[in-house]
Length: 502
Image (cartoon, rainbow, N blue to C red; front, top):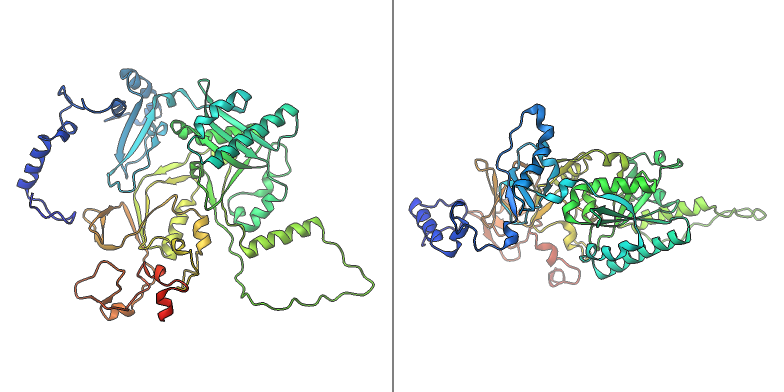
């Protein structure tokens, strides 16, 4: 009591720390720090919070590390009342074969714990679920799986399942495929695929850099090969570890070798997109929009104009989509061959300072590596990403590498933790970034890509009002604003008070 702890870096006297621990042990929270051998240890916790045991140490000879999974079933047999097993290890520790059966638990946004949490349910040790076609008896079991979906999405899933069963009963050609994941005679997953039209892949190649990720011609025109669109995906979180096996089984039964998914920017995104590759959108040529009369078409009097062919019409439609930017959805794709290769998790904490072209392209390059799964990427961007302010016409000069639509379509925020804060100090000894509010952001690898900065006010030793941290010797002046101010995008709106005053 009475100690100033306004900053995480401020030292605490030993006497104050000892007094705080003694008060903690004497309070009701003391049960959390009691000794495990005491009778009252964890007595007041609910039963579901005690349904877990932890592996403290696992040491095996290198020649026998592949057999580490054989120890998990005997471990669960020692705790018949426990359903979960957890393991924690530092972010920079290498992954061992024991962790291949575990699922990484995503951390909370405010989490600063220095370890990665792995979770395993005893049912996941019995093998992956089996993929089979949907049967009429499975309709009732699908409702708990899609209970968390929006009402419109639930209705669409039910319609797709009923349409598939109707096609199967009538013996019609399958325009869609519906599969379920069966585990111990229980439905734990749902996969709905659709056979795309003939020109759909060519349209995607026109609007996205699809050729950088797969050979399109290799998957066309052959028996047992082709493309499929993933319409719906639902799985019990306990079996999320087997997502790649479920997709592989669905593609094998449907005779498809490439799976792609289009996600609208305003709709919820299925977690299965993390198992796929995000395809970068193509950038249409930016031409000056000027209203002018169309040129006259010269033609001979007696020669009739040839009617456009079907291919000409499709090409004109693709060019229109690319030119007008109507293809605004995000594209994810994966080939059947890639599903056989396990992604290696990378848990090292990578912090990128600045949402500049360099910082964004660095993150996109890491996320585009097909055999690595980065789980601890953070972007320090004051004001957030630019498309957060895209509800009005941009009156500020923006980046030339990423437009607002492109930032949305690469789904950066779903794979990177974006922090609306400002860096004021780097503590290299503790390997953490000190933010303007005094909080700490730990890192294992730090990339500083602040980009170009406005130096006009800096030379005058003036800070903008929206920049909270004011260095000693600097001052604020009414009316002096910098482009580094994250709030300037909300002030410079068309028809706003500030714009009218200018």
